[in-house]
Length: 89
Image (spheres, helix red, strand yellow):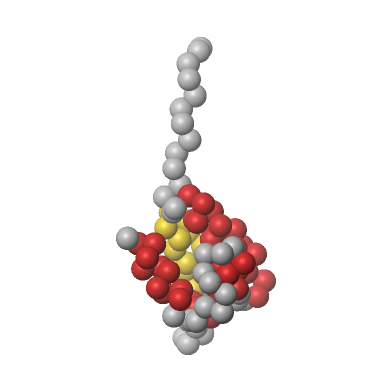
């Protein structure tokens, strides 16, 4: 059987469940990097009992995005929702 291989399918959505613990930061980094590289949606599901958790407090998100030069150094908490709204456009 001969023929050209089918092109790989585009990743359009990444699902990342997290308990927002420090040990989950590496998995989040991988999910975020894949989403950024493929321009995919990143959906984060909080799977912890705490009612007061805020995704902007996720361990190291701003610092990670600053290292990757997605956000400028010293970005405020408000930079994350602003970045998300820019990516939706």
